[in-house]
Amino acid sequence: MTEVGQLLRRWRGSRRLSQLELSVRAGVSARHLSFVETGRSRPTRDMILRLAGELDVPLRSRNELLLAGGFAPGYAETELHGPRLATVLAGLRDLLAAHEPYPALLVDRHWTLVEANAAVAPLLAGAAAHLLEPPVNVLRLSLHPDGMAPRIGNLPDWRSHVLHRLDRQAAATGDPVLRSMYDELRALPGGTAHGRPDGVLVPLRYHLDGRELNFFSVTSVLGTPLDVTLAELAVESFLPADAATAEALRA
Image (cartoon, one colour):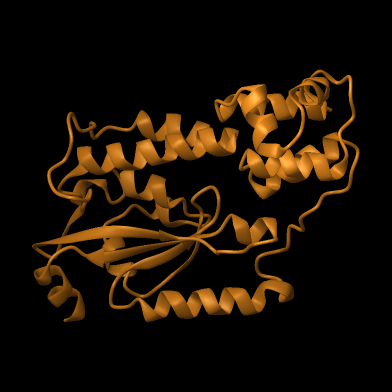
């Protein structure tokens, strides 16, 4: 097992903080932090959680730090479709339904589809069956040439947006699955944008039934999660970027 000090040093490096900067933020001496990172000093449970908080370490990785330090995990990881999270999941389903007639979906940390509202289904027309078989990865579905990519009017811009976001997410979480997904999607055809797109947002320009629908996306996460599963959920909502799209969706 990797020592807790080594893991903390990796997280500090990924956040581009010096030992002095982190020690000031966490209210500990730089000398003590150095001893923790080199294994000369064993950090307490509270110290691990304090440093993890200042480093904005995800809950899943905070549990890994605690285990490496010889402590029990601090955050539960509950079965998403089990009884304990039933009320939360029902509320999220209500949120998706309330967003209709505009598309919205619920995804987990690896962009696996958990739930989608009824407005998503028409956008998937023409996608290959193998991309729609559970578990559905929504990023692969959107950028794959057998998926939604042929109907995205500004595919290079949208690919650049998705890849940039995924790259940052992989770096922020240290998740090798996300890094592998980034490499896979980056190798798909479709190009990337050169230069800055026009406008104030990167739109999704989608061709459906002979018309172009223009969307902008909003990502929502739970505000106060204390459970690993809930902390890793996100709602992706798509809103009309012009009046014509809004009218078409309402119709």
